[in-house]
Amino acid sequence: MGINPSFASPDTLDKFYISGRKMWPDLGELQNLKFDRSRVPDEVVQFMRSTSLNEYGVAHYVGSYLRSYHDDFKLRMWSAIWAAEEYVHYLVLRRMLEGLGEPLTDEDFEGLERGDFVTSYSQYFDNILVSPGIDRRMVQLIFGVIQEFSAVIAYTAAAEKCNVPEMEVLFKRIAKDETRHFRFNQVALESLCETCGEENRALIWPQFRAIWGDLQMPQEHIPYFSENAIGTELYTGLWSGELRSRMILRMTQYFKKFRPDKAKPAIAG
Ligand SMILES: [Fe+2]
Ligand SMILES: [Fe+2]
Image 1 (cartoon, rainbow, N blue to C red):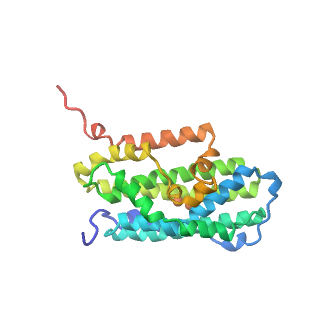
Image 2: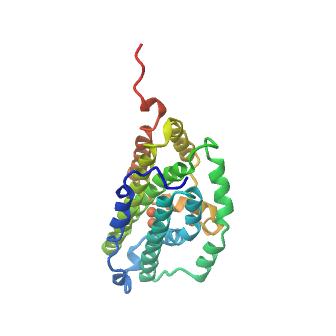
Image 3: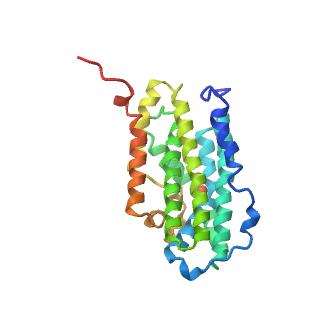
């Protein structure tokens, strides 16, 4: 492909790289956290173990991003920056767990690291494509919109349920970061759409439906999560009815605009 023709202005995506640098000005503040464990529901602590490991798992996940973005320089750069930002979430959550007296264990890290994510996830990804010719960057970005918004919902739910104001602030700050990630994927997808051609654009809606109908989060492809019952069900288990509705409405309403029948006005007569 050579120089990527898809993102006309360098600022379109670069503003996200810059704004991310302001999110966590001083991680030193997290060194000596102490929380009252008795106030925090067990399900929130379990969720934190799961998501902390999941954020740590970006070292696995970034591989699939780089594969999808193989010759797109800007999006490869995003993958690297994104991975670093998710790793910060791991650091924050790990500190929070330590502050609760519930540290992650050596077994947790080993279980996460030894999971053969690449094979399992690649198969899932290849099987879910609605057309062999679809631009894989688009597929990854559609995934990104869904995954990052579900992260927004998950951390918002944890903030609502944790019962500790200082923890609530940190969960909300992570959720704000996930909102940026969600927006990045939307903006990149829309920007790509400007030059992707009608054929590719017409595949976005069916591709969204295919992913939405068989949504598998990355952690489902690492056995340690299911072996320890800290997988997706736990992740979504905290969501209130209102948050579930927000997830469904936001996603279906957003992707509807890519429906082929919505792209052009109906021909009269
Ligand atoms: Fe994250
Ligand atoms: Fe994220």
